[in-house]
Amino acid sequence: MAEPAAEAAFYARSGGTLAQWWTLLHPPYTLWHLSYVVLGGALAPEPDLAVLAATVAAFALAMGVGAHALDELSGRPLRTAITDRALWLAAVVTVAGAVAIGGWLAVATTAAMWPLVAAGPLLVVGYNLELFEGRLHTDAVFALAWGGFPVICGYVAQDPRWTAAGVLAASGTGVAAVGLSHAQRRLSTPARALRRQTAAVDGELRHSDGSSLVLDRASLLAPLENALRALCWAVPLLAAGALAARLAG
Picture 1 (cartoon, rainbow, N blue to C red):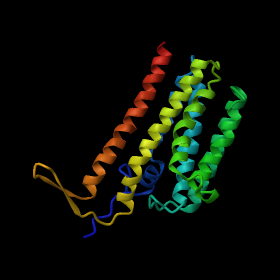
Picture 2: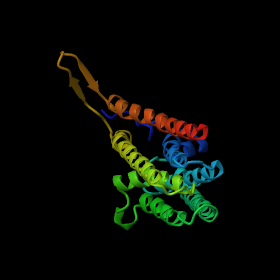
Picture 3: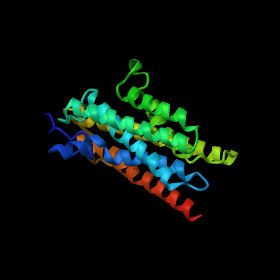
């Protein structure tokens, strides 16, 4: 027997326009990935909070809004009723705004930002619209673009002194963010399949002590989404703590 249709994500909301935009923007995941920008900025010896705020704003526009609007245009995975026109408008305006902020940062802080400013739109558009025959739409690219890339941008925008220790810290943090984003993908992919592509679950898990657990969508989703919820809290708190410690020092 088919189970009742599930929401597209654990944070999804049903209802009117505001609920649909809330769902589209993936607030828990967006906050998670913006935290990588903060982690990168916190690695600088003396973080400039105005520069950090601008860097976060650029990622909030391009990754938080633009990327998600383009993703919804590609197959309607969230099943929203937001029009194609509204999605295209949101994507174009926010990605352009992010590029403008990135250009300002490159002029105001360091020219080393220019390659990153150029790479950002390519990653957003190429990944979410599955361009180049989907070569950019892979778990590896997601982990690099949504994990390591924000860390490096947050660090470079601060125009830090290029010391061996600083480069090592930024590289290590970037790799850690890639690992966390890979873990996110490994958890969210089966969770999305259960919510969006599964009509029914039928089975039983029998334990060695003779007890059993009836398997359904909720029981399979619980460990996946509980882990995702925990990470959605843990990574922003980690970033906030790292920045607070740097400023206090």
